[in-house]
Structure formats: structure tokens, C-alpha cells
Length: 620
Ligand code: FAD
Image (cartoon, rainbow, N blue to C red; front, top):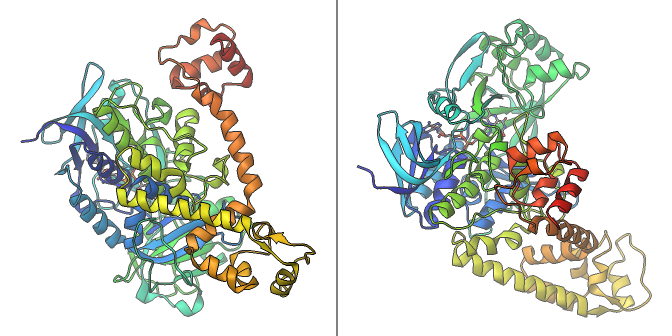
């Protein structure tokens, strides 16, 4: 019934969709096995993509040839560039999305992908022969063969849903949990843990009074995620902001004795930075209100997502508390909020390629690795799909450095440090923030995507054209000089000191008050020059000039540290022979098996003196 596949991907969430698309586009014969084909790329929680640090990841996925950016653009109902008032390292694109369209667009994209087959069923077991994954076994008992397997089971492995005192098995509301796989992986020697996450109730938007809320419209000139030719929105839907109050908090407190979290029924660790509303009022008792974002779920639905009100309190408590929020007095509830506990596998059991140490050809990606969030899942799926394809075709894995991409930071953190709670990306996790901006993801990664056969020729050509244009504009701005009279007259309205001599135009851009719009005012010639270039090229050139010294500093640091990254450690290196290592370092090094000396420096518990010992021992 089935041919032998190169790659089997288990699960069609955000990780599984990217993994199967990437491997198939690169030429692998791929099978995507998922429990329910009607929930492909389901947004389990908020209908939004991107945001701080996550928006950068979506752009990186896009630059490499992945689909999350394109799907987000096609299903967007609102676009905002967050943190515009801060430096460019912090600018973060975010879309509000039509939940149903997001899922539909992903399914259509996968159906159009060559080399990709589908099968709707639950995978119960990984087929392993001589330490290698050779396929999967399904709940119907079918054995399907492949050269590599990617597991992206999300929150489904032994998922347990909690609402107040009730709990029942489930991978997500109204979906079955997946059983059997964790148990088999444990027998193979894997370690598993338990985590928890939660989601808010959904409301009928027709029952809300928006006059009591603050409107949050999209950007006046909406942007988009993808560097390809998707079109920005020409109309948008607003979100709304309201607040909880003491009355809401009192209603919620009435349910604390039935809370699965406070009563200890939930054992798994939840995300500290994304607490439930009961957790917020408990932990921050001094605060008399919490912000609530009222987010529409799509163009054609009245359903509303109540962002900031994640809860697992009993449904009647949820309902009574919601109705005390200004604007929610007559709210009708569509679905209650809930919490879910699920199995994950500590990611220190993985190589940087996302292949497991224990079973060759077996890859893990997404929430199964202890992360949370669509973007975090999608980028791991992309990398696992690429590397599963490489394994199936006996090629070297693709590993992105921390100085190249947030994706590199995420995987490096997971593999070397592991995670005690659901891991989400923050800009603070990246040490090369000024290099890893959302605007330059294409300049950083398109070439890599093209070389591995994932980014298309069209993408590559447009990247080359953009790069040439930026270089050309930088050259022109550095060669043109402007007279003091012209400059001082042109910049009269701006708070900036006058100049006395001719000045190179590029140098003017170093002043914080001066950007491309101000340069444009200086002379008709400069305006004509800038008009030759797209807004993206102008933005890139301006950032390059304004932040030149910071960029250079980070580049130098990356190069310095890069020398340790070049120093490879053999997979069978015997750490027991290095007597001077601390016992903690020896234990961690043996478990994580770093691929380079650079990677060894980032393992928690491995100190600088352990690195010196290793460096001397290895004769570097
Ligand atoms: P999922 O999107 O969970 O997809 C897993 C897929 O695998 C599904 O299609 C499932 O059917 C399939 N599957 C599982 N097991 C099998 C099997 N054995 N055989 C075949 N198919 C299988 N993220 C946040 O960033 N913030 C939040 O506040 C947040 N809250 C959440 C609340 C809830 C209740 C849930 C469920 C998730 C929440 N998330 C949140 C997490 C977010 O949904 C996930 O991070 C993201 O969806 C993970 O993507 P994934 O691809 O790893 O898995």
C-alpha cells in the first residue's frame, strides 16, 4: 500500500507542516502522518503570528524557503510592527490571523507540494533496526518504511486537559490524546518529562460592548512577513483593549479551591512568562487590574480570543468573572479556557541537527522538545525536515550558528542547556541582537536556503538584487558631499547642530534625528537618488550606516568565538580520559556530546576552566 519513503513526518502542527514541506521541496519522498487531516496547522491558542523575537523567527523561516511567513501573510487580518520606537534590533513584525484561513492555506500549500503524501492515523511506534529509525507503525497496525522519521507530536503525548475539578485525556480541546509513543521511547532509553500550558475562553463578539474598550488598529502602512511577492493588507480588523478589576479578581478567587493548579492536580511546569489569570492575581496581589487584549479570530467569524485571560478554573467561574470585565457585561461564552499537561523529551538528548543521539535518523521538533509557540515549533520543524532529508541522502546536517539566526540560538539553547519550563524565544536570549534583525533575515539566510535546494531561484534572484542595490546606495551616499548651506537650510526644522564644512551625506545619517525622509528634504538631487531605491533598500542602508559600529563589534565577536566553533570534537571522544575535568562537566559533556569546542562552552555546568583543560588536552 505504501512505498518506502525517505522521510516520514508524524504530526501536522506548525513543526510538522514545515518539516514535511521542506523535506519534500528538497526532493525527498515524504509521508505526513497525522491524527486528523481537518486540523492541519491548527492554531491551538492565539490567532496570531510573530511578535517580539518570534517575528524575527518567521522572517528567518521565510528567508530559508519555509512557508510560515507566506501563510501568515495570506491569512492576516491585521499587521503591526512592534517596538518601532526602539532600535531596529527590537522591531518585531506581528500579524493577527484568521484562524480558519491559516489552517486552510497551509493545507492547500502542502497539497500543492510535490513528493508529499498524506495519511490520517495515529502513529503508535517508531520502527527501529540496529539503532536506526526505519519507519513507523500506526494504530491500524500498518508498518510504513522510511529512511528517517521526524516526530512533531506537540501537546498530544498523553495529553490531559483540566477545567476546574474535571480532567480528561485530550491533545487539544475536542481532540484525542496520542498514547503509546512515549512508552515506546522510554523503553528505547529516552527520558521524558511533563509540561503544562493553558488557553483562555472564546467569546461571541456580538455580545461585547466595544465602546468601553480602547481600539488597537493595525499599522497605517501595513507590512508583511514574507520577502516573496505576497501582498500587504489593504483592509484590516482592529483589536481592542480592556482591563480586569477587583470585582473580576474576587469572582476568580471564588474558584481557587477548585483550581487544578493551586490544588496540585497539575504536575507539569507551565510557562512563567505566560501565566494564567488566576496565577497573575495570586502572584501579583498588589495589582488591581490586568490588561486584556480582545482579538478577533478572523474575517468571517464572530468568535473572539480573550488574550490575557488564560485559565483552568471551573467554567461557571470563568463565565461570572468575564462578565465583570468592562465591555463584557453581556458576554456569551463559546468555549471555556483550559489547561493541558503533556509529555515532552528533554532536548539535551538531541544533536544540533535535531536528530536524537539514541536513534539515528530519528528527529524531534516543536513542543515535544519542551518549547512553546507556533514560531518556535515551525522553525524547529523546518530544520528537522531539512536535516532528515540530508540524513536520508547521506549529506552533512545544516546547523545555523547563534550569530546567524534566532533559529540557531533556539536550537543551541535547547540542546546545550535543556529547559525546565516551556521555552519561548526572547530577544534577550540572543547575544548578537543587532546582527539578527527582522529586516535582514533574507540577507543572512537566503543564500543558505538556496544552496540546500529549498529557497527558490526567484527568491535568490530577488535577494541578489536587493543586496546589490544596498551596496550601490551605500556607495553613493558615501561619495556624495553636501554644502553646509544646503544642509543647514534643509535641516532647519530639526533639532540638530549646524555644520560648517562640506559633509559626506552618509555621515549625516549617523545623527539620531536624521533618517532617509530628512535626507530627502535636503535637495532635489538627493530625493531623486533615493527614489531610485525601494523603501526596504533605503531602510537597510540607513541601519547599516547608523549602527555601523555596533554591527562591526558584534561581527568581530562572532568571528572570535567562531574559531572555537571550527574546532570539531569527535563523537566518540572519551571524556573519562581527561582527569582534570570537573565531574559535573564530564557528565554533561558525555551526555550532550558537543560537536565543537564552541558548543562545549555553552553547556551549563561546563566552566571556562573545563574548556581550558579540554583545549590543552586536544592540543589546540
Ligand atoms: P501541535 O501544533 O500541537 O501539533 C501536533 C500535531 O501532531 C497535531 O496535528 C496532532 O494531531 C499530531 N499528532 C500528535 N501525535 C500524533 C501521533 N502519534 N500520530 C499522528 N499525529 C499525531 N503557545 C504559546 O506560544 N503561547 C500560549 O499561550 C500557548 N498556549 C497553548 C494552550 C494550549 C491549550 C495548547 C494546546 C497549546 C498552546 N500553545 C501556546 C502552544 C502552541 O499551540 C504550540 O507551541 C504549537 O502549536 C506547537 O506546534 P507543534 O507543531 O509542535 O505541535
